[in-house]
Length: 218
Image 1 (cartoon, rainbow, N blue to C red):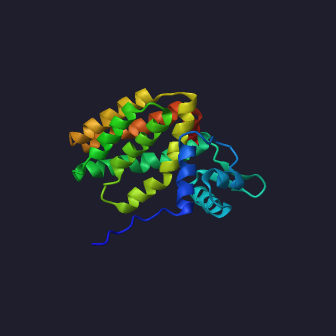
Image 2: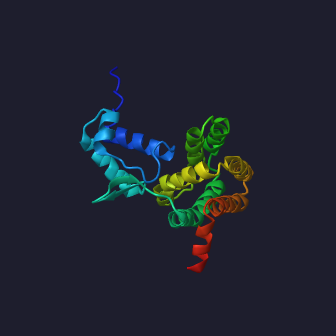
Image 3: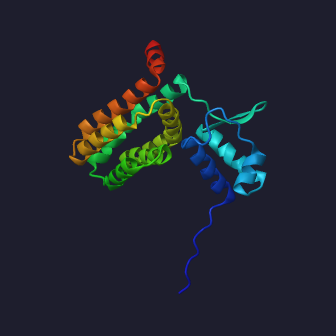
């Protein structure tokens, strides 16, 4: 029997994932220039896959392309944080409520929480936390809702990376994660949704207090 070969990721996808990982783990910081020739040399590819990867990252909001300044990692400020977290507050608690009501498996969330607790650096913790949150909503039963949350997932992770660099608060957030998971495992869909809403809101209020004031004025 002939085995089916494992697909080889395209060069563009390889570069895309590599740059994204560096941004979300703080190796590339907001405002930092992303030079095609330098990235091509680092990843061992031509400039074409780098250029395509950067276009995709611009579409997801992680980088900014400017005709005069070139490509840079997106800056994070109160306005950006408020926009991203407003979307999360509107959609993520409801998605979790539906996941719990459907009796969806939370094994992935439990495993992600364990990885976050065992993490030895910010990069590992950040990636585990992203997976924890996604596992809460991805089985909500509405693929469109899941995709909408996926679209802001990277930007939310960028906000977290910047906030943690200024004020490492992951111990508090880890405790909140455990409470959210406990309520979800108990089948308390409304309680889990309320806890998640409070968790998301309190994070952005602590990290970007000026964002709350602007939201109330509008």
